[in-house]
Length: 349
Ligand code: COI
Image 1: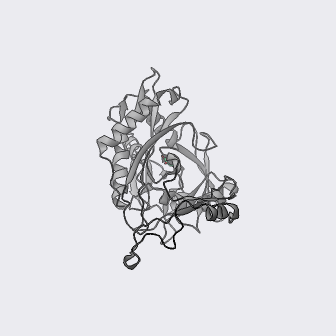
Image 2 (image 1 turned 180 degrees about the vertical axis):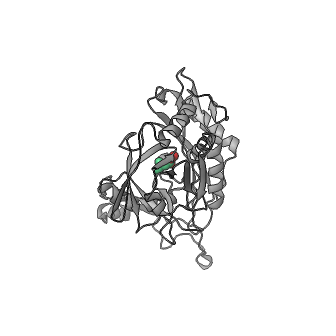
Image 3 (image 1 turned 90 degrees about the vertical axis):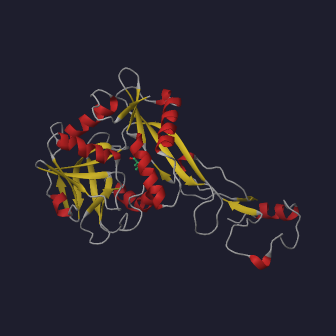
């Protein structure tokens, strides 16, 4: 809504001398940023309502660090003896570098990244939940923070790490998830940025996700954008399909995220003698699987109870004897220090 009162107050008492023209070289205007005096700011509440905005002088705005850009997610766990453990933060560092390179953003070195994660975790150690109660989710993020009007890299970037204690990602807790196969919306296309962990990767799923949630599903499974027949990933996590002793997961070809949990679970499954295959996974194969499960830093290793595709709903094996549960217990054991880490995945801080 036009804020007539604020506008008229500005006319009466402008912030600047009200000359006819600003001090600009009018004959040499390119598409660089020459900020005009005022900007209008109006905030939207959680319920989607824009309340009255107002004019203010052009300048930096305050932004919550959790507003997001290119971001990462890693966790700190508390061991039974109280010590804090980090799980493979160097892999998050490398993934941020790869994503940043795709977006033409400079990124911190692996050492800088890991050091920042360690410092943040240690400084916030009183927020790490007691052993078995959850973890401290640590979010490193990288955003363009400099002024620019045209299309090009930002003149300044900011790297931030913040943390929050978390429990289960899904409201189902550790109960099996009900997934919906989305056929209208896709989350990424070949050559795009589906493999980059940035907000550009998550914003496009929100519509499909909110529709599926309103119908009672836990999350959405996306198909490839070309044939709409091959599994990609869920809105929040990677996906695995189990048939007998074979565990398949969509190959990372630029359209899905290379999850650190995904990679770790693949290694644990191979160690346990499963045949682990990265390939194109056809949706029909998913519907005929014994088990399906999801992996991600936020999600952990989560069993899938049902998948609905077109007019078909399939149920999968879950429970203590499931492959998902066996892999999950090894991963969680290593992450929380109850199983010896023979792989060098865990760092004690
Ligand atoms: C993570 O697993 O760390 C993520 O960032 C996923 C996001 C949906 C919370």
